[in-house]
Amino acid sequence: MEPSSDITQLIQAWQRGDRDAENQLFQALYRRLHTIAVGCLRTENAGRTLSATALVHEAYLRFQRAEPLEIANRAHFLAIAARVMRRILVDRARARHSEKREAPMPEGQPEKWFLAAREADEILAVERAMESLSAQSERQARVVELRYFAGFSEQETAAVLGISARQIRREWTVARTRLRIAIDGNPN
Figure 1 (spheres, rainbow, N blue to C red):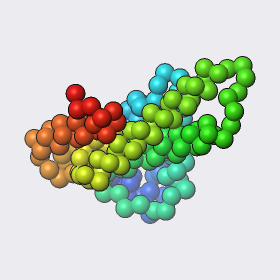
Figure 2: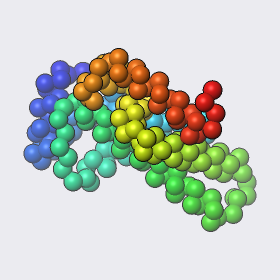
Figure 3: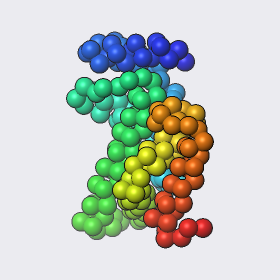
């Protein structure tokens, strides 16, 4: 892993349009991006159709096609990457959900169809719960995004959000309860 200052310099060069810096940035952070992808895929079941590697690559392509972003540093970049990966999964789940409504169950491998449909439903349930949480507390939604999906520590999350690690612990506890209630209606 390169020092944070080197990563920040790569981000700044990338933002100026330097394609070499873009490639170096993604190479330097690939392991962390892969870890984030694994975290994002936690919401999918064992029958998932997208690997962590494919999710990182899809996120890279989305970054390439996106308008230039204002990214402050390594932690900010990784937080945005986590959000992009979650969006990819939600987009795929919505597409799968739409296909489920429109297409008849295929012959031959119905278990794969059921797994894909259940997986899409689970991802969409998590997304609805995150939207509900965001409406209640944008900061708690960011804490969940950083802690759960991006795999940030309390200290990393605190640094990104500019609050204390103690406050992160409190927000994380409340956010998990709110998500549990939003997903299955049960606070326990």
